[in-house]
Amino acid sequence: MKLKGKVAIVTGGASGIGEATVRLFAAEGARVLIADRSALGKKLARELVENGYDAHDCEIDVSREDDVRNVIDQVVSRFGRLDIMVANAGIAHPSSPVEDVGIEQWQQMMDINLTGVFLSNKLAIAQMRKQGSGGAIVNMASVLGHVGMTGAASYNAAKGGVVNLTRSLGVAYAKHGIRVNAVCPGFVETPLIDRATGELRTRLVAAHPIGRLGQAAEVAKAVLFLASDDASFVVGTSLLVDGGYCAQ
Ligand SMILES: NC(=O)c1ccc[n+]([C@@H]2O[C@H](COP(=O)([O-])OP(=O)(O)OC[C@H]3O[C@@H](n4cnc5c(N)ncnc54)[C@H](O)[C@@H]3O)[C@@H](O)[C@H]2O)c1
Image (cartoon, rainbow, N blue to C red; front, side, top):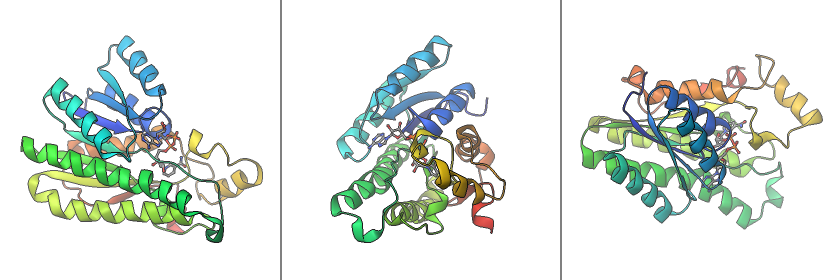
């Protein structure tokens, strides 16, 4: 019960890595709010409640400041506090040379994968500072925030932004007891990479020295570590959970 009594928001918690994080947090004693633009969040919350866990949901778009503010207000009015924010919601676009990336596509990537993280951090930090008892923020970056990949310019740029935003906020708020960190997964079996089949999938597997893709539950364990007191001296880091992708 590493999160007993803690109040957590997981953005993008309805699917994939976010869903695995929600399930693990609930099992570790947290009261969890699933904040996702998909109605699947409601289904997951209902299932968890039926199994005796404390889970709720709220439909939001993380790129809208009012939506993020609303979800934090909901948590605070229900539980009186916010201890953990997992800024996980994200999208991926099909591989494309940068010459073919339209401004709308670039902007959508920035809005969700970078601005969404900025808003989730900004508003969670404001709430945690008001409470005055610290907190933990875990941002979902990627190996592609550390190294480039052909055809992924906007995703690379957004995730690189998340890595350095995490450093910036980690440095700024450590003295307030708010630890900001990130997880950088390699390629993980979730609906996000459903499009990666055939030869592309074979290449992705081969890029991981461990010889396979990751599982969402393996990433969730790293999120749990950074969100819990086990990581009490960890600040501003980007933890690679990548089967060796970046080690070569
Ligand atoms: N799967 C991978 O290989 C991989 C690797 C590295 C990093 N990541 C990152 O992990 C995070 C989770 O991805 P996943 O693989 O679990 O994907 P997923 O598609 O299974 O889950 C993403 C969730 O985010 C939600 N979402 C998307 N846009 C949103 C928005 N604007 N507002 C609110 N919710 C929104 C979706 O509805 C979905 O439930 C993303 O940030 C992704 O970039 C994934």
